[in-house]
Length: 419
Image 1 (cartoon, helix red, strand yellow):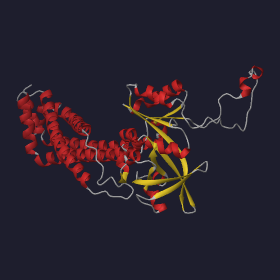
Image 2 (spheres, one colour):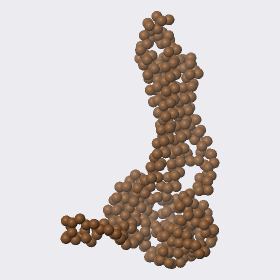
Image 3 (tube, one colour):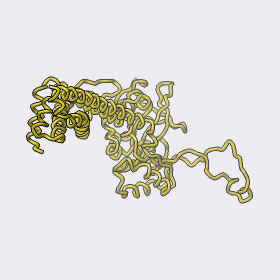
Image 4 (cartoon, one colour):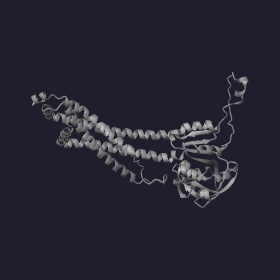
């Protein structure tokens, strides 16, 4: 089989039917361009939402959950082991929210090679006092450097500096929704009331905005020391240990291990955000399905054009076979023709798709709920381009294979006799 001759004949057939060949290539170009633009935009959107929710969530959170004792007194008695015991109105066990031996647990976790870093936290429900009105909220006492390292808290601070919490005592950063409710700004002093009735005055050094109204209306940040002072607890008082792993996929197994090893409650990010992750997966599936459908439609266009080309070129095929070309040679001529259309359309599709994603990426997207986002999110990942060109070549090869097999079976004697 003379490859150069086959390619030359395929190119001549394309030139002879340039209009139809161009339409087929444009169909592939459009399909790939739309696939890349759609997938890049949808995955950029997913990454944005993940940044708002999942990246603010530790891969593993360790805490003391309020729940009833697993073993009730009657189940511990030998006299009732063979009986069916029905217990109602069980009260939860008051274990307290403090994680005991938290320093030892953190020291052990930091030696784990799977862990990027560990951030201790103190969570305290409080009331923010605005005149005679009490607004329910939550104060998060954080280790500022660790929290910044794991969750980039500063990216959500729209006014002020998160590191002021560590350098200035008795300070607080509150959510934008909360600041608007209380009509306060940086430099103002607010009062909060603890659940035990304690009254504490704190100076505002920053305003945060995550973009989730429920969080921005209730959430605030202080240093660990300030949160412990608010609750009247010692310096070792910790209610949460936040763990970030090198790979979030390890979180379920790690959470199970920590529950058993430290006798403490632990929840992984997948369990905590199961509904959110489901939504992200569904959006990705939809975008891939639409893009692949476009490529399949383009493949049918190539199939139809090649079919018509074979009918129009019956005499040329007959002459080729009469002059010594085998059925296999004729088949490869039409497969080559299909591949040329697919690769050419695919390469232009990659270029057009990249241009479209660039255009989407500079379109202004400004909303009060997401102050850090200025343009529409786009994910420029090489994998999308590789998938696009691979599927284009595969689709056009299949689309050209059936007409090529039909051309290889043409009997030149019958065609010439008919002429």
